[in-house]
Amino acid sequence: MENPITHTKALSRFLQLLDGSFPSGIFVHSFGLESHIVLEKVTTIDTLERYLHNIIMDQYQKFEFPFIQNIFHCLETNNLKMLINEDDKYSAMLTIDYAKASQTIGHNYLKHINYNISNANVKAFYEAIDAHKCPGNELSILSAYAYELGLDKNTLILLWCKKSLMTLASCTLKISRIKPSEIQQMLFRFDASLESYIDSAQYQVENFNPLFEETIY
Image 1 (tube, rainbow, N blue to C red):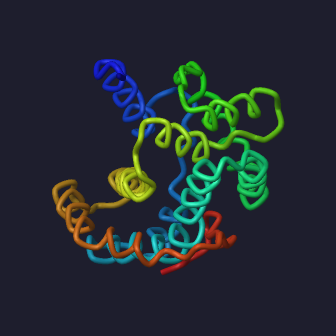
Image 2: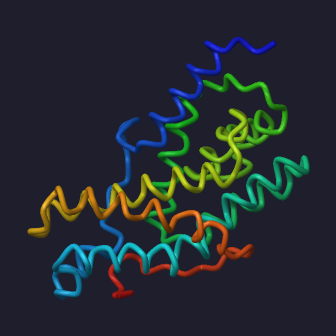
């Protein structure tokens, strides 16, 4: 039987990786939010909330959400070749700077995970990354680690999306006059809609990318 303390330690490590503050080397970008504020498309808490809803619908539902679903499907069906292809395709659909950052963060994740993996499929994927058979993107490595810990894909999508919204919203504190208390309450309101966004996500990855300065408002 699995030692519950060992699982707790692994879950604690997963949460620290998901947070994005550690390890060092995180890729910080406003993902178009700065240009929206400069163009006065986002000036209030209501317009910020609308912007975040739009980025979920225009990007996350079409790109990151289905990508996470695909990673889980590959692991569940023991399809290492397809898993490697998905990781390659993810890099190809990013801009060069973001692709490099995603790979750097992903490899930092592996250092902290320390390859202490029991699932054979996850272990094989991490070994393929170590052998330079695929890039090893941040989200694919995180998804595989979540699978190792027994998290279901929708739970990971929920946690990742909420974390991403929090990170984006925190950028607003530096480049707008929106109050922190307003931002906190606005983020709480997303809890009522995230489940429906996840359920209605498409199954095929599309390359929508505001990257990063296009106005999607």
